[in-house]
Image (cartoon, rainbow, N blue to C red; front, top):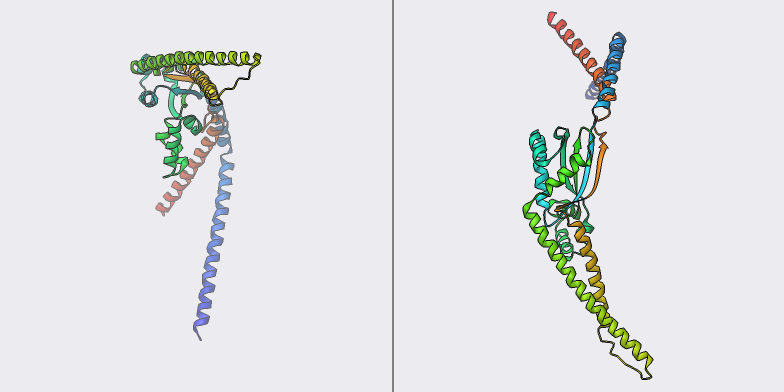
Length: 326
């Protein structure tokens, strides 16, 4: 019978202690807020000076220090994808090593100290990857059976074979086509091996186009002869019958296919004039990421924060020293 009152007393004591602790917690918060208010009141002049100083320095840095992003969309031809990525990785390593002599003398960058970073990534376009390429479509289907299609189209085995790739580089000053783009493309296209492959490939395309023109000419002659025969028969009083299985439709389809192929070859001659073909260029995109262009906001807040942090450590040090003296 005596156990129940004791449990109630213990519960009342526990609740009382919890209530005191909660009250003490909020009291400490209130005290801390008041101390912070007093700190700002005592140091309002210094805080104001630091804030104004930070804004001034930040405005100067935002005006004098600017970062620009630049992009080149390229298409590596003749199986030169790995070659292209290796070249970009080499340039990136030279930038990290601050090897300005290599960047200026070998690559040809006019202001190598202004070049801060360079990367290359594939432009994901699975439709271009499988366009008129049955083997690529079958490859995607086969790989999709064993994994996530999103991972497959983005993994390096697939993505490096996309036709277009994005070269991005950063400079801390405005650049131009002559200062960076043309030297970079000249360096990327300087390969004796791929230059030989290019000549052989273009020669094969021209030979194929000449053969296609010859076949199209023969088909045109055949169609003209048939047309003349048909027109002559219509003028005759006699009925002329011809076999519908004369494969005339197949001849017309063949001509159409060859004409389309000739169009593709003409585009190839335009796109394959370089080992690494540049398709579009975008220069001097102002970079506003992280703190770029925001120093007028970051610096005053940073100065005030450091001042408050310093005041906190000073107060903490004084309290600890007072305890040691006691």
